[in-house]
Amino acid sequence: MSVATQAAGAAAAQQAAGRRPRTNAESARYSVLRRLAPALKHDMVVNLQAVAMMAEVLSARLEKGSPSPAELEGSISKMNRLARDAVMTSLKVAAWISPAEDETVRLREGVDDCVALLRSSFNFRGCTLANEVPAADFEVSQVALRNLVPAALLSLADAAAAPSDLVVTAEISTGFAVLTVRCTPRQADDGLGIDAIAVQPGYRALDWNDVQALALAEGIELFRTQEQIVMRIPRMVATTPLQIAPV
Image 1: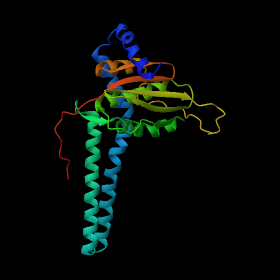
Image 2: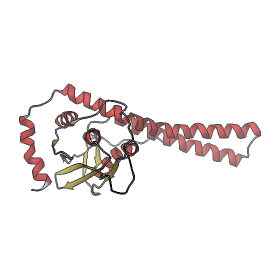
Image 3: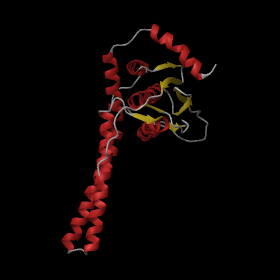
Image 4: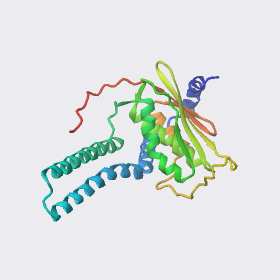
């Protein structure tokens, strides 16, 4: 039986179990954001720190004497580029907090965004993250992906009793993608020499109830086994007008 067939067959059982209140979905979204907050803060601050450092360098040069027009122009141009990067990064972070409901993203790129945010914190726990979703011109809801993929990864990692390898894969068809998030506990004698660090989450642990609540709110079918979460995500067509990026 294919993963797609399993996902479709599990939908009726999920509905029979009853729908969770919307407030549970809001709680789960908040919890996901709280767990992602350190990485989001880091991404925002990095470029702002670069602008501040460049400003200090330019100030020091001015105190030592007037730099040549070419040096001054080069420094100002670099600061301008860094400032634009900082603006773009800040907008990306803001989009995680207040997303456009109908914005789309290519499946692999959307998973990459989620994996990149979580990779450092997972490494501290002795866990690895890999995105094996095939590159394809298949777009899905960015909101649904940013809610469900981190929730699935965090819930599986939080439930794991040992360092684990987490992999995201997908089977893509015409109208939907079946996304699988798999967590495989690492064998003690695998030769990697990586031990888990006792790190307490900055906020509460996520569990299966959180993932279910988010899936129901987004209209996503999913089911779970002991070591994986499978979700059936429909293709989405963008309806938001194109935005002009700041310059």
